[in-house]
Image (cartoon, rainbow, N blue to C red; front, side):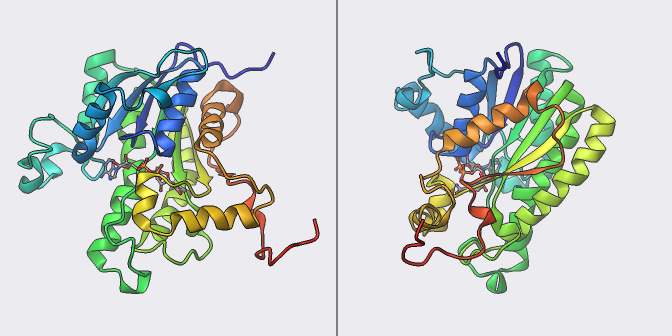
Length: 300
Ligand SMILES: NC(=O)c1ccc[n+]([C@@H]2O[C@H](COP(=O)([O-])OP(=O)(O)OC[C@H]3O[C@@H](n4cnc5c(N)ncnc54)[C@H](O)[C@@H]3O)[C@@H](O)[C@H]2O)c1
């Protein structure tokens, strides 16, 4: 039988702070396939996440097919805007949500992983994070600072993760990120430079696949996912309308679930995906292939 077997593998999923997003579903799918999972959580969301876990509020969504609960081997603080602690400005380092958590930079994450698990502790790294402070602004109305912040947190952060965690990966390791089709088609409302950030993320996926493939023997892919009413997406507004629009117009009319993205991620991370790198994989019920909206009944 050909099955996804990640037993003995360790994954780090960066960008999990509740149970509503793609990162959580991916963590769950990786664990279902047998991997141990660590997560990286944005410091401003860390306490709330730990509280939700402690108070059992996520138990229902943590339930795995075998009845056990998804557990995180470690929950690391991570602000992917900073490569080293020294890069974080004083007002961030002194902020009450940051000052108690230790080194929350990408370099800090790499150092903690090595301290906790040794020199080559990782097989799978998932980048499931994005932030665009001006996402509600049209690109035309986006400030330079807002644009650069979107690209820094949502795209450069992948470069930083592959650069710093590549040397920690065991042979056959796999990096994965999440992108959105607004990188290549116009999606009104996906503003603030987020469309530019996703275009950079997809282009970087190809270049990083080549460079990190040759240097570290790892793969780098990105999943272009359909809309999901996660916490981040709800901040954009209109997410319910987008979900409905996809259901009305995609080749497959059922609403996309985060689990479908999770299982694709597990496949890509597994040895079954060993020939796939540098690729954008659509998990969107086929919406990306449509050239025209279905207007009032299509006779099918
Ligand atoms: N929800 C959608 O419709 C959709 C569609 C396609 C792609 N995606 C992508 O999926 C990924 C996950 O997003 P999601 O929608 O599942 O929402 P989510 O809220 O579950 O994930 C986003 C995470 O990013 C974290 N984050 C924000 N700024 C950060 C920083 N500076 N450092 C570290 N973490 C930070 C947030 O705390 C949050 O946990 C993102 O890349 C997003 O663009 C989402």
